[in-house]
Length: 375
Image (cartoon, rainbow, N blue to C red):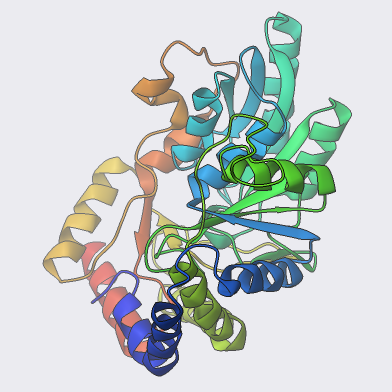
């Protein structure tokens, strides 16, 4: 059993995928080929924004957006405490200070009330400038972007949506990636839309931000790559990955997004009545289900269940076992608000196999093993 069945996906897409890869090989345009621009146009149209700038990975996408806004030493950037390390890492990499705030226990996503408490605490202390807010579309579900945006706007901060896990999700009919002053996504293979290596993109409606990100992606270029007008980085999506994503985008739009939601519904039906907390999708939200994550009673039960599932040949993962504020790399930053929800989630969450090619038999196998594990 595969946690995310990329082998099955390739088998289904093999004729189109092989043809796309051979086309790039025959052209020898491995960097900056026409597929890159074609992909950027298609992604921007799908998300519903003016600009999409592809780059080497999702972490770079976050980094580039913050660089474009001039984030640096003395700045505070507010980051959810329950997320992957990269969301806070890029802040520290620029010399700024990540300030962690708590999440909602039902959605695992940004809690605007905790966010505002953190903002007020930083402002009252007076040592850091209020610069930017990030939220995260965790596990495919949109964050509460509208209320997070209201906090950012009230305090005059940039708003960056981390849509690394959320491509395809929607909030009140608006796609993930279309919120904030900019958004970043990842095309890591296990993401809802993944390539065959690393890849990422920045989305924005701002002409100025788009122009800066395009420059920063290629060593801070001006009129050309040998006219360097600022310090940037080397962060490009290569043509092979763009060609792969164009093929996968057909499948994603055509059936994968619908099928992964059907798989989630099968899980929720099969696991109904168990003494666990199942994931929820609030009214008006639509998830792309990067993960199907449930909550157990405590860390001891979670670890015992995971061990039993492993013995039964059922893969599972813990996203994430440690709060951001407890990561050693962030030691000394100080904690402006407590994050009890994050601490509880880190001790109790468990993600089950999840992908668009999940069938009823596999879901029933996982459900039966989980029932046995729970006694």
